[in-house]
Image (cartoon, rainbow over all chains, first blue to last red):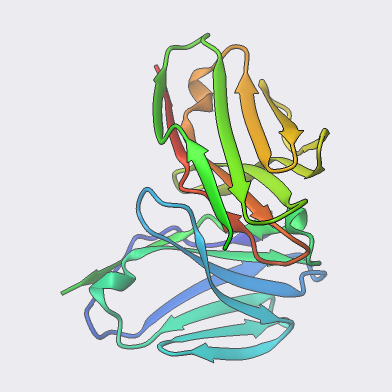
Length: 112
Length: 111
């Protein structure tokens, strides 16, 4: 079993839809949960970060962490064509980047 | 502000040829440096990380090697490329943080 599981998609939605992206994990030591966004032929950029359980909202984006289920989600409201990208979940048990585990990434297409 | 550079952006190499990819970081001191490979549908695979000059840790056994000759310079090398070395190579840095900052990447095709 992989430490982090993420459906690679692709996921195609119409503009304005609510998008739900998810990851499951197996390591209960993970404390830092992140979502990176990667545009085609570019490096990933940090989009959202959550420590331990709970929700975090930033504009149209909401990150949720359920440690009891080992499940994390990213919601995008009022999706825009500019949101079309690959979204990678990532998690770590410490602030040391060398212990960060990335999901496979979900490719999202938002159609105008 | 901090900046990370990678070159070349794209590279096509024959099987058995050598490889050298370079990464440099500006605007920060003593960063942690990372080399990742990204293959379609497989996410980011950590290849090497370094916490200081000359300190390299390998995460995956392979025919690749890494070196850190200067504080903000990280080099990925191979003496003989394999077909399976094709992929998107990303360099990243961090400083005592969960967040990593990625470079623009190098797309390597081995023919």
